[in-house]
Amino acid sequence: MNSNDDPEFDFEDRLTRLHASFGVNIGNLSLSGSEYYFHQSGEHISDFSLTYNQAYFNYGVSYIYDSFSSQRRYTKHDLKFRLSDMIELRTGHYYDFEKKSVYESYVGGIYVPKNNCWKLDIEYRQKDQIKNNDLTKDQIISFNFLLNYNAKTFGSLFGIQL
Image (cartoon, rainbow, N blue to C red; front, side, top):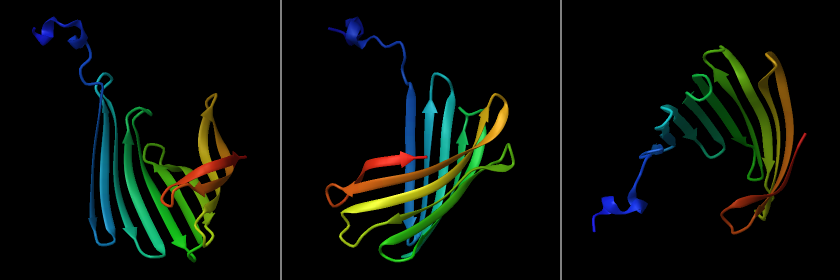
């Protein structure tokens, strides 16, 4: 029996989407990238990141190209400080090259008690939104309570966004 004669093997759409990624670590420096390609529409999302990690300090910068969002090209900057084993502060922003402005920024913190059973994550985020051709600032305050289910993974028990 030939597989071409079997109706289960008839394919109209071949490749619908493709994801490829890579990562390299050299000491405290990490380089990574990913590509999502959608064959039928020809759209894609590319992401290249460079991260520097220290014991109490992390900095990351990413370049993202998203052809779905009207050819959006932007960078993402993240900065984290661990004040102690229990408190981490973070901030970051997204810069859009086409609009030549920051369109999203955030500041937040995480508290993790010494028993490592739970986390409290608090964040303030401001994002540009276009509604009815008017630019508005969407401001979000979020509180998340996360539980450590299996000593490796924290899962959100509940979260509130205001």
